[in-house]
Length: 122
Image (cartoon, rainbow, N blue to C red; front, side, top):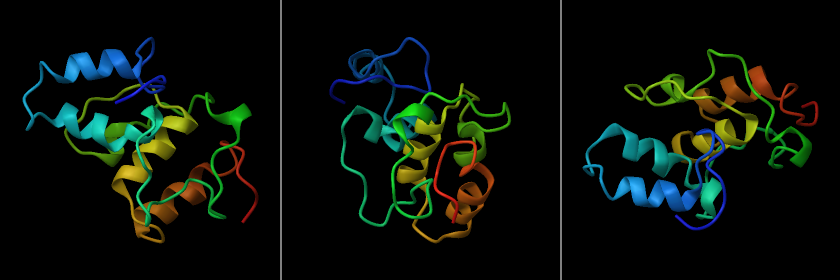
C-alpha cells in the first residue's frame, strides 16, 4: 500500500496498514479486507470492477466520507470479516475488489446506495 487513508478504518493510513499487515499471516481474513479496499491506497482498480455509481463514475468527492447505515460493512461483502465503519468511499473500494460489473452483488449495492452516496440517478 502507498499513501492515502484507509477510510473504513478510522485514524488509519495506508502506511500504518502496510506495517500492520506485516504482522498478520497471509491466510488471515483481515488480509482479504485490506486487499479488497486497496484502491483507497492507490492500487489499480480491476478492469471488470463494480462501481457504486451505475454509470461507471466514482463516488463524488463530497460524498466519499458519507457514513452509511450500520448494517453496511465488510461483513456483508466478505464473510468472516468483523464489522467496521463504512463510508461510501470504503464500500466502493470493497466492491472494486469483490464484485464484478453487472453481477447480482454489484447491482444490489448500486440500487441500495446510489442516492445516499451521491451517484447520478440511473
